[in-house]
Image 1 (tube, rainbow, N blue to C red):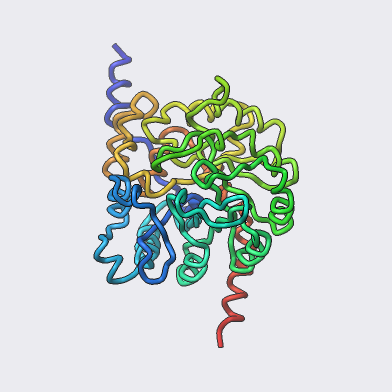
Image 2 (cartoon, helix red, strand yellow; image 1 turned 90 degrees about the vertical axis):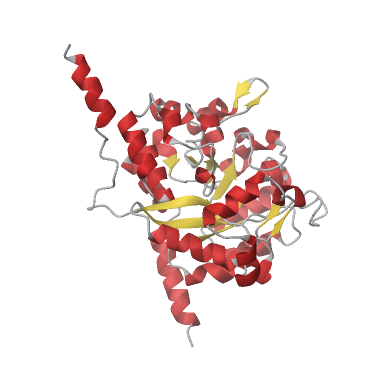
Length: 363
């Protein structure tokens, strides 16, 4: 009979999901933006993607309409993003990610195969106005001037390079990328690369999301962050998640983020990762904004891992970043994971350099 009160208590009493006031809020290292090309942003979405329900959910998350984008320019998305993070109790800053397009082996942009293009130039121009937003650049290694672009984005304050090989058509294991990786290493630019299957776009070559394809940059000393922990998908019958887990013992410069791991199609991966040796100490916090606003994410999908009381607490939370943090904390993500991204990206040093550059640029 004594068990019944305990069950009732678990159902109706939420855990303390909020961050302690004595600790600073967190960095989200995985945030996406897009637009429609207005305001000279240079952003491109393919017609198929633009006409899909995914685009509607995407812009709804930012609270903007196509008419607003046309009237005020795509920069309004950056402004809305900054304000939403400013309103968060748990998250104080985010890395905003550019996305390069498909570039063929001759170094030419292939617009027919490009589904999304968010240029570095747009983010480098807009983000300095917002102290809570950091620049995550994206450069396809096939570009003729890829090395020059690495130096350029480093000078502009980029904190990492973002790849989505499955849709950018990047072969990470290509030995022709060696100079690119060496330059990234020398510039202290980590690589945040999608791993596992990709379902947020209209089509994808999911073989390119194999985490084992990242062995070349890892062996050359590049800090690599495997986005989404290689959740979902398999290669030759082997889970991509298991392929990644095996790599943690081989490469001390390998990390993974926990972005998108609350989605219904990824149930179980985060719980499994947290119980594996070596894995929790390599995990970093990321949200994959704005995907946490899609119907594939709900705290009620995780009943059994979290209590009904915690699920209701998460559901009642207004701010999207606070919801994401509370849900992941309820699922077992600890303080060290939420805190680690800032350390890996060396943001205290980069922020000092950023402040100095801004002072030097003032007339």
